[in-house]
Picture 1 (tube, rainbow, N blue to C red):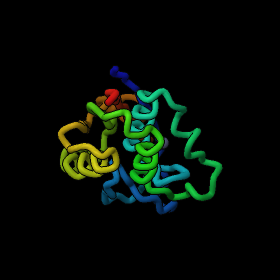
Picture 2 (picture 1 turned 30 degrees about the horizontal axis):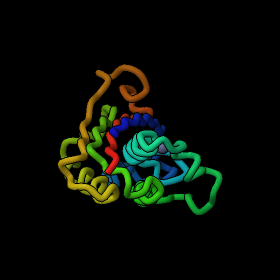
Picture 3 (picture 1 turned 135 degrees about the horizontal axis):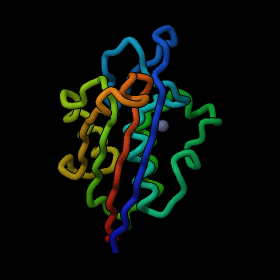
Length: 160
Ligand SMILES: [Zn+2]
């Protein structure tokens, strides 16, 4: 049996004085402003985690790692993906993940290899099974205005 899951996430940019880090796919990208969120606001890791949980027929990311819990403040979202992998259990194998980061800046290309490596390690699969791509919205809408970053992901699981 195979099952597909879809994940979508959005985080707004913080003001520079808020001192947030910009973390995408577990990679810290040099920036004067990061994304707002209770955790490290890794929008790509969150979309992939939700796609993965969805494919397994579980609840969403907020159900297992709620914003209201102090222990998830500044949480490493790659670590949350690793925890999600344990929740889903070994009876489901990750066939593949594909994902898109939607933003005008940063350009994803230069960081894609490191992101794939982090995400694949958390899911316990080889990097070839995890796709990460970037796109812009041609300066339209909130990503185009640089107000935030969106990410979408799909995940295909196969019953062992
Ligand atoms: Zn998120």
